[in-house]
Length: 259
Length: 327
Image (cartoon, rainbow over all chains, first blue to last red):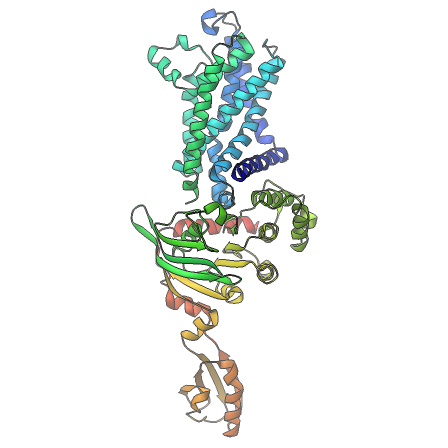
């Protein structure tokens, strides 16, 4: 029991540490919001002129269709580059210090990924705010928005932990940066973020089946656009399993970073 | 009780590099123990294993009687670690740094405000408590790191190159704080350093590592004495006698106007030598005493200049720390 309390308090303290940093300086997050804004304003606005029901799986505009995809993309970008930050902390000596505290390793992973999900939620709020400004018609009732936040938290934690795992093997900031960036586009395009899976060739459909991003986008799209919830429990279960796997792997390899 | 007991400890990295090769040593509770050696000698690897950050290949380590492999979290709860690089977080304020780490070290909530305030006052950081640490000077960052130890009260504190990159006055102050931490709060201190003056000033005992092994260990005075005695040089106005009584030492060199005597304890022998020469009717024009330094001890027991694996990273880290502190 004492160890559970210790685990939770360590994780929350580490999350608090990151949250305090965001409070001191949130400029990085605002800059990161530029990219999803451009996707919506430039790419989305151009394609929304196409009123093909094939492209949007139903009677929606393209902007409505892609909004959930852009939320997922903005969160993905923040999460997958977390490893760069972690390696920087290692290089500076801060990670060594953190790992020499009595905190269990897994609580360090939980704390850091929780903090990253705070960044993720910030991005989701920014994108949802943009959709309001652009007059994109979505179902923004409070429960649906809370549902989106829940998915964003799981998703950000999963990819942050994935990035932490990768960073332990890659070892330098520049390699992590290159690898992270190389991964984001394939993950994004091999998902249902900006076009439906039904449009893909057969082989790509198989890829998107195992792409966690597809489940994330599907869950969020059900909540803020279609209102058809039948697939949501399955989506969330799939994301949950992926998140748990990533957290375990990050906890196992974290020590590698400081050896 | 022994603070640290290391027995037959080895660390072999993948590729067969033996960074630490079957070393054994003890650190007594309450002492300041120095760990010296050239880059790549295995000092940092050893510290990482004691602080549970690295796993030993073989051998055992006990910290206050607890095996690091059996209960690593409990061991970590007793130790503080100040790595070579800057370990305080520049994106937080001084107060927040102390607060977060006091929580991670399970300092009771009721004790936190008083201890943090006391530590900030003691280290002269109260006025800057709410400033972001990235705007601090190197000396202030070091003080904040020591303040963390005052808040968390570890039983043993590991300091990796505590005064690297500090200007002479910050360095002296840092030494003062380390001594106080040891004498007033009873913290056992384990220091690695390249700075022989620092080792001589602070350490009760030290061990010199070379190529993964402990080349020699003991109190600084004993080590210095072990490599030869003190040298007394007397300048005279006429030819001095060519022998002195054996209890004063032995003459190694003599010419028309000077006399060199090697003696185990120069300070004590000096007045006796003066008396003896005066009694002999020799007029003394000048007298000097030189004692072997830790530098001499270090050079004797290490193979400096030989590059081994790990030295690149150590050098890089040291320089990086230096650059950041020097800003």
